[in-house]
Length: 169
Image 1 (cartoon, helix red, strand yellow):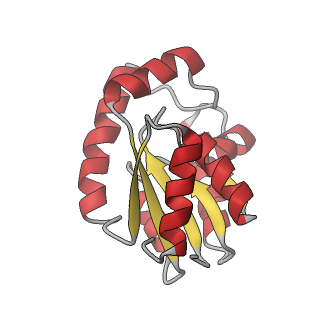
Image 2 (cartoon, one colour):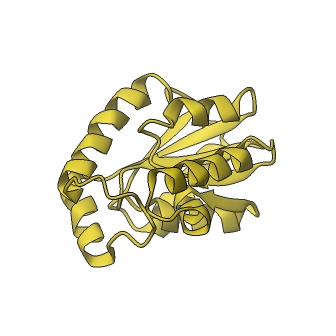
Image 3 (cartoon, one colour):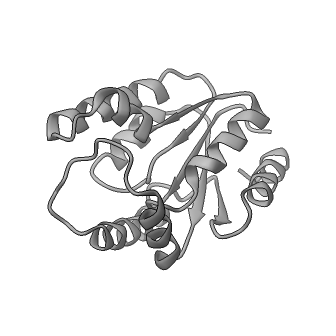
């Protein structure tokens, strides 16, 4: 099993939060998420977003094995990779179709102080998806476990844990 950080990435509404809670419990590791940092540091402004990312990056670069969660794309992607540095980590890419992400977001909404960039959520989801397609090939090329975000979370968590035990992640 990996002794490093497990970084869950995926689109908004992909199912990362619930998966990370399961993995954190099973691995007995602290779970940190950009959304939690937004709740603690953010206020919906650009400066608040920068504070949230600073807090998130500070947590993941401590070198303690964690389960961490963020989209894995966007302007902070390379800073996330830099913060992880030479520390061992495995990426879990939660792949979830656009329509499923949007349906989940319609039910749940955005419950964090996220800056309003004046862009419809459909456009945000599309932009994150395009960016992730690029980042998965470059920044997050491996070690990585790809999972289906539409499968039951218990099944997905067991698949990730099995891959970690086999050293595939």
